[in-house]
Amino acid sequence: MNSVAIQGIKGSNHYLVAKQYFGTEIAFNECLSFDQLVNAITTENCDYGVMTLENTIAGSIIPNYALIDHNKLTIVGEYYLNIHHHLMALPGQTLADIREVCSHPMALLQCKQFFKPFEHIKLVEDVDTAEVAKRIAKHQLKGFAAIAPRIAADLFHLEVLEDDIQTIKNNATRFVILRKRDHTKHNKGKYIQGSSLALGNQHQDDKIDKASLKFELDHQRGSLAAVLNVMSDCRLNLTKIQSLPKIETPWKYAFFVDVTFDNYQDYTKAVAVVKIMAEELKVLGEYKNGRT
Image 1 (tube, rainbow, N blue to C red):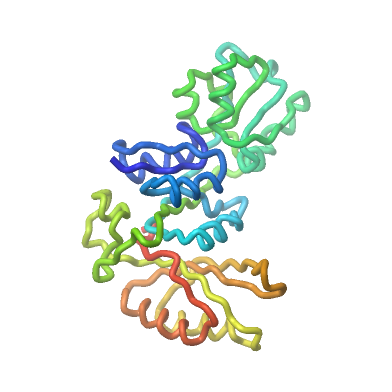
Image 2 (image 1 turned 60 degrees about the vertical axis):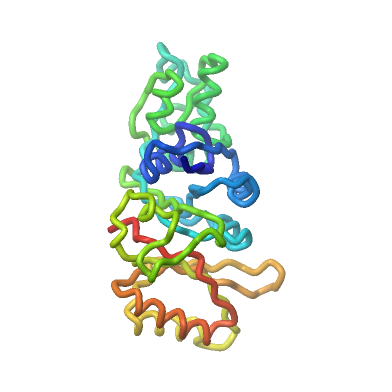
């Protein structure tokens, strides 16, 4: 049985992703912060971790890129989850009874428009969507509601007051599957041991067709454009680029990119060339594109 660290508790979106990615035969390590999640992978011998990286509404969760890099984690897979936010409370209550709604800041941001007509409701940031639902049920908190996935209402015996209250209905979040870097083994470019491909969720003859890279460049004019041209010439499709400042070196930046490709050899050629051009190049993960 694989152990999987998730941000949040059972009933959260991380929990849903872990269940859908790995199947039912897993043991959960519930973490109330991303720092705790990383610690569970690096020191508590969790086999895997599930971490949010970006959302179609809120954009990138920038600190998580640094957590992956600094803690020597590798990305072995990804999963895109359509987000559905539901308002839930103790049975028998209505919206008129609710005085306070608590949830994760991201959930509150994505549902803010729904609450505009309800001036009597106070929105309060909390650590996790499902954890709030669990707390309301445990302490029988009347007048309080949570924003959480519907599975949380089922787990904690709450009543859903309103379905799909997110402002933008086409709302998706990208999650990555993490592991210690030294536990990852390549198999002739076909798949990564320990990913969903090796666990049987997908066929093992599915090839790796996506990678996450980090590189640093000097301050010469056109250096970034030159690297991007190499990727284009090698038939890589750039799907994401994110810059992060290097705290220890003012005005110095690292670039995190995601690329997809049809031919693994095209990718390895691009990596070899960029390694020469960049001051530093690090492969953060090679895995199956979750959107194909």
